Length: 215
Image (cartoon, rainbow, N blue to C red; front, side, top):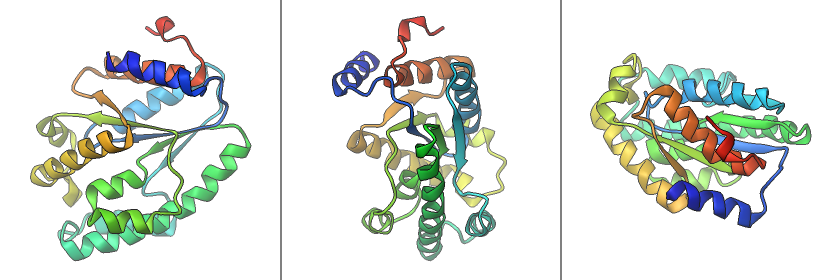
């Protein structure tokens, strides 16, 4: 029912047949974002769309520093949270230039995380929103919602953010954000192919594709 309502909403907004689109995939660590982004990119390219993938943190010098800090045992502390919030905001601004360039070339951008991740992972949220006020909002946000225990079992345990107690808090923030920001929540507890099918059905109406043809 929710999916049908979303499709009707998209048609009423007249967002069909667009060329450029900025899609963000969100979710806690271990939700399966990387796999689903890869499948989505392949599907869209098969339909003839030019697709570019971006990842947060990026491969920039700032992004490299972030990845290093995420492995620090102190990374979930209040002070480190604020440092990471600032670094993510800086790294994100560097990505905005790339996204702007892709728009001029009519590409579809699929982003592995965006500023909503900072709101979910870092705090306080009001400050995170302020330092990200110049960041572009995605056209569509897909939140992969998964059981925390299942997500943790998929994680490699290298980052402090992959701890069960911490991820439970993050997931709660994500679901609250989903209500506030109109995310499309995808049940990621299903098999990979079924999750991919649900994602395609959500995206199809945005691109003028008949979702009944999706298998």
